[in-house]
Image 1 (cartoon, rainbow, N blue to C red):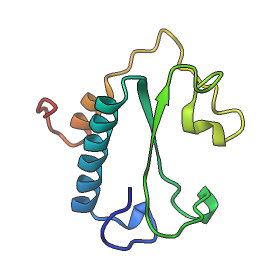
Image 2 (image 1 turned 90 degrees about the vertical axis):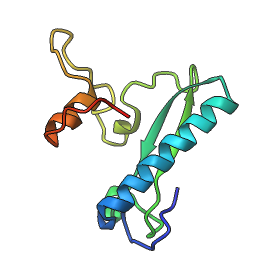
Image 3 (image 1 turned 90 degrees about the horizontal axis):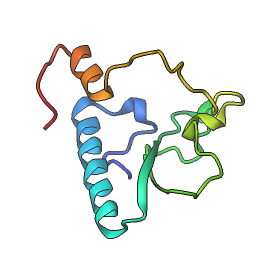
Image 4 (image 1 turned 60 degrees about the vertical axis):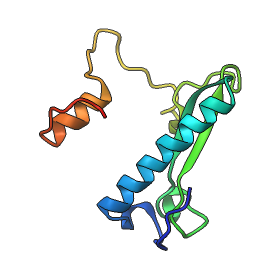
Length: 114
């Protein structure tokens, strides 16, 4: 996905652009799931800057559909670009809030997801 306004990288996007990108990712995700029932998850990726691996210097966001069995061990997803980080698993006793709840708390907003 490529934002309408030219920006060199993700970090140059403003809040309205980030919100629009998020809405578009969610729409595309639903479309892909509707069209292909074999899709069971997604990786969303951004390489922001040359050091991070960006080779096309126009902001773009990857939405990668994933299917059961498409990788021998998908643990770690995009973290596999950093040696030794892909197999990270949190300790089983650790309790974490759902990501959506975590985001609402960070912005001081207790609304339910819309």
